[in-house]
Length: 331
Image (tube, rainbow, N blue to C red; front, side):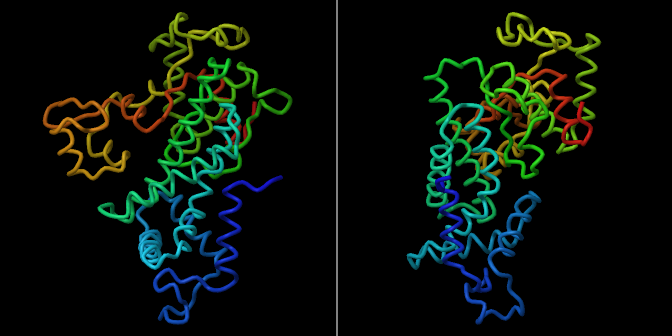
């Protein structure tokens, strides 16, 4: 298989770093006072793990600082190291966008790479180092979805919606497969619909939300909560006669709170809290806001739109199958 841009970045970084120990403080392990330094393979593993923990990381702050210093010397080594360490969070997302929205995988990954590097340049000043990796990742994923949306507009398969887009791509290999695709064509709209629901369930299982989701499903099935009206459901959905309850379909946003407070929305958008309040007062905040009591609130659906998170329609049966699949209890 011909290498894509992700493969080329990985090959370049490994060639530049070789087998030498990596120092994120001075870029020279011989001059650093720390006794031990990992080789690049180990260093990358530590960086990816720190990023996956979704917590502030001194390692990533040092990486970004080293990247900025390298830029001043006209050296792209650390810029490429940072990109390479973000690639694990983009590979699975690029694969799902390519497969489910019928885009060329190499084109999707090229767009991601270009958007990530553009964001690296744009955040050279005025952006805290700890925010840069998140902004690079979000820009890469948004760029891929823009390509997918253009492609979908040119396609006859407009009935097929994209998979749920979360801030970080899931690294667990169990999310790369579905329990129903072994002998099925993922280009079939019915199959794509099932896969979409199963991936959603798998993600919610991963993040410990499935019990609350199941309560939501119980409300749908007992009539305590309305599902989609038939007039909203697509023709594909109505042909799935084997699912239980056509009116059980629901938007994923139905499960979320209707509003999110402004600081949380600003964090998700990569905007500083103080800046967010100034933008609201100036009318330039990316999402509409409403004043509730003593605080500003942002509609969840508006925030999802700003983050290019597609509000997909799923069926409880598919969601539960996906959750059971990754939980080791396939049905």
